[in-house]
Image (cartoon, rainbow, N blue to C red; front, side, top):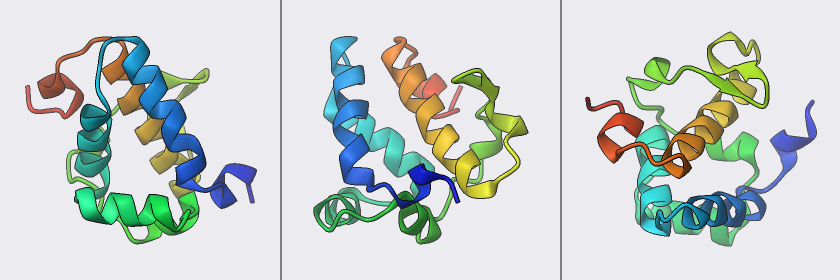
Length: 114
């Protein structure tokens, strides 16, 4: 089992927000990306952060967006569509979406609306 699986989402979340904010994006946009991927609304996301849910449990309770397979590309030198472990792939999807947000892509493109 990879260490990230038992890491709390709350411990990584501030890094996602900081990365986005350094590039002029907002916490609300990070939350929107997380909600799009997982199906969690603002209340559910805040609850997971408050109780320090692990990535394993966070994604176990998530309903992934049906368009998630449209998320492709490289994160940390690995193509997200080629990641074999289902949980690691979900984590990489999240990383990729936050990367795209921080790189200045429009929300429509990040959320695969356009």
